[in-house]
Length: 174
Ligand SMILES: [Zn+2]
Image 1 (cartoon, rainbow, N blue to C red):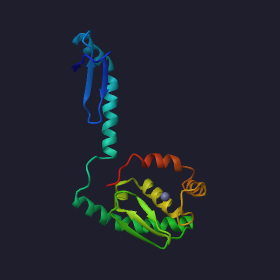
Image 2: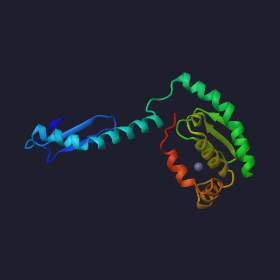
Image 3: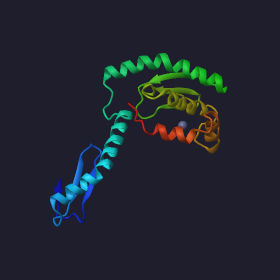
Image 4: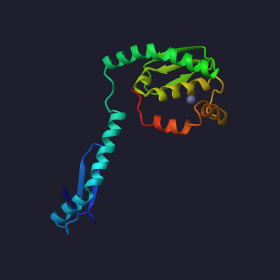
């Protein structure tokens, strides 16, 4: 609770760190500011809840080397059969797949259709893992992000490309 000479009115904010800040101008009593806080309490609780959810989805901390090894082992078991299945289902062909500890991209596809997948895909729910792999498989046909590429990807994920892309943005790699 901060009394600030620069404040024009009572403001309440929830920071990314979870800190709740109540600021009020000198003309307002502490009691009034407190009253304001109590009125807004449900909003504060919702904001904190949202923050906690976001943290659960995209934890801030980076994986430790041990966690990376666990993900790597899981990725080696999960990703090759997964891309194999998706390729079979869609009829798209890739040359080979490799698994890397990439932290900048979920996946990539070379000019010769070698697909590289980040082992951090294992931290995603399965449907998003599939979505990233489908994205890379579509690059074996269109090596760009042209409208034709997006049309193909959208068709292969049942018209859900935008929604899935939005969902994927909630996650950070690594
Ligand atoms: Zn792409």
